[in-house]
Image (tube, rainbow, N blue to C red):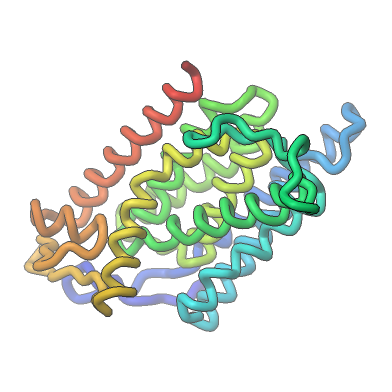
Length: 295
């Protein structure tokens, strides 16, 4: 039913079904549409956060599916998440008040940049940056079974813990469905593909904006940002890409060009152990993010 691709980090390179991230998209969107339906009669707010998040996930899933089909170059797919910001901008989701570490808390509704209202800057400038960066850094940490599912799930849990109860309900089914996919992915049974990683990245960014917890998102995805920084520095300045060496069941690296190769270079180990170490790193950043949000 699903196309199969080789698992390059297993002996014999067995074929594994790819693109099962579409199941995450379908289950999440159906749940959010139903949530919007049952809540619309109780609230006069339209559109609801559930409807906005559903549309964003649909955008992310479609763009990931497009990449799985066409195998787009990075120079093109790096800008695809911008289209997913349209529902957030047009529907005015999120609060145009953002806490920053340099300039303090900025209320974009009360400032003007030259002759451009601050809200326009927030919805059509700041939000696209948040969504594009988050989606790309999530998509860049992959290649090993579990990275594309377990790491986003850890961040999802942190976002739920740091947000108001009214918003947490939005992520119940998305989190459960991604954890189920993560179980099979971690055990080498499936790949979620770019469909899953794009949809997961846009879920993280969109939910953080809707729930107004962008600071929690930033701290939670610091390992993603660190990984992407190493990759981009090596690719843009030295033309070098990360690669792993399979030695029996042990993965090694003779260079440091990503978070994965950093761990495999310092401590060569099995695929599951490397993924577990990276998950622990995300647990630390996610816990720190929740602590900062609550304190």
